[in-house]
Length: 362
Image 1 (cartoon, rainbow, N blue to C red):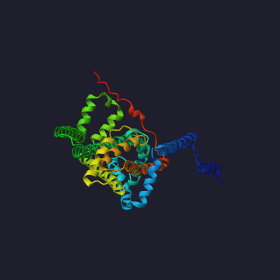
Image 2 (image 1 turned 180 degrees about the vertical axis):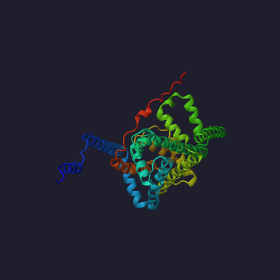
Image 3 (image 1 turned 60 degrees about the horizontal axis):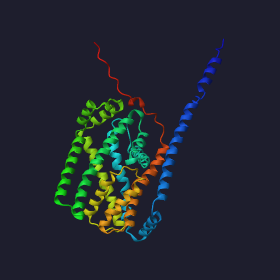
Image 4 (image 1 turned 90 degrees about the vertical axis):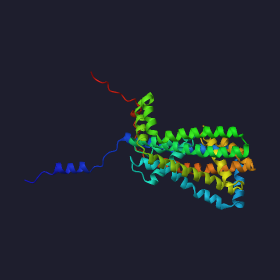
């Protein structure tokens, strides 16, 4: 008697049918891409509005076009060539420690950093870069990314304080003619702040353990995990992050010097780097988003470069062009990367809950 193959055929047919997709998954994916596109469009619209409403925007454009035909283009080209090296330094100081937990190629890290730049344009002191980068990190490693990013920002702040303090003392002594008593007072205060900051940076594990013991806030699970990540960083890791922060600072300052040369602002190399360090030092204390604080930063540049006889419109153009090259161009690229990122899952928000301590029996 021939075998009955009707069941096997049915099983074969059932097995070869394509699996049906869950409608809820499709809706979630569509909402995710709509959210990403909305964020990118919001960034572009705010940027375009601020650029159009900027005072003297037409005069700045006319001055820039005139300088393209009259100035030494080699300085502008050098400034543009330094752009990828500037952000490569930021990639290195974030990607190297994070690669212990998640495999990251340099290109993937570069996309994440630029996405963070795009989001940071809308937030005070560029705090939004945390969220932009976290979208490219696996959910179980996003708090690690946040902790490492915070360490990198702390290292960058130490470099800014060190160079900014030295540049400020040079300018105050050379152009404002402070009395020796004021110079020594500022030098002593700055030295103590830098020593305390450097000690806290390289003794991060000890500082965090003290905070965990005496600060109730560290009972939050996420802060405890982030503290553990920072404590696990070795002295070599911290020195590497600090070194890349200094390289970034040097490249960014050199870009500024190139634009000064391009627009013909006369200043010696020492005076130029000291003035730039002073400008960066004061800018760090302006708690405004990069877009909203552009006018305030421009007024600061006008005041500083007036010591060297620079025209106010030229000073404003230099400051605005440096901002466009180092923030607007990377932010536009970051908006494209932000739209193309895939959903890697949700952040584990349960880690924000306090850690429940087990009661000892007896």
